[in-house]
Image 1 (spheres, rainbow, N blue to C red):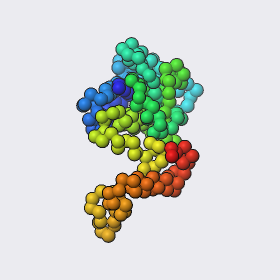
Image 2 (image 1 turned 45 degrees about the horizontal axis):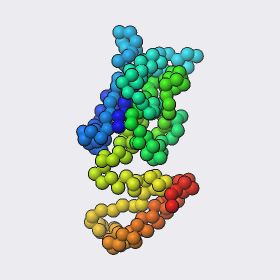
Image 3 (image 1 turned 90 degrees about the vertical axis):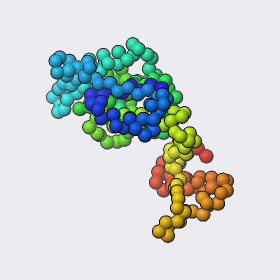
Image 4 (image 1 turned 180 degrees about the vertical axis):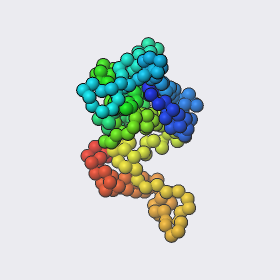
Length: 228
């Protein structure tokens, strides 16, 4: 899989994409993530990528031309399944979306910045818009890193234990059950006896019950779509 991320501040993506699961997946050749500086196609000697907003509103807007040229350059080299814009008013990222995107071959992720991007980019170049929540951050770089991470960890071989992803929260529209590790007792706080029983059926039943209980308490809206 290849993920191309377009940004005006590519330095913000170096650390999130260079370590842990994503970093290992890149090193092992499971995914190719390339971060591109949109200023490559900035206008004039200062490589300008933004301008004032028509209509007089406050804030600067990312210009059409640099983004258009960068996307065209990439599309001349390969076909892309999706060109995604990280937008606060896009569809909210879910585990289902990450599952879907992890099956694709090549995607572009465009990071917005400043006041946003010229609407013509959204109308003519973008195929999908994704949000990481109903709030606004300074740019799309951190949301893009979140999206990339959520996709890469689903690629076969990215996790040491591939079955781990199957028990993640939201994978079946349920929140994950509580998890514990050694010691079995600390400060008087004990691990539930069932987890020490060695009985896989009892443990699985307990985990299912706890997942449903926790989801009902914390995210009841998920239950209507839960896989039983």
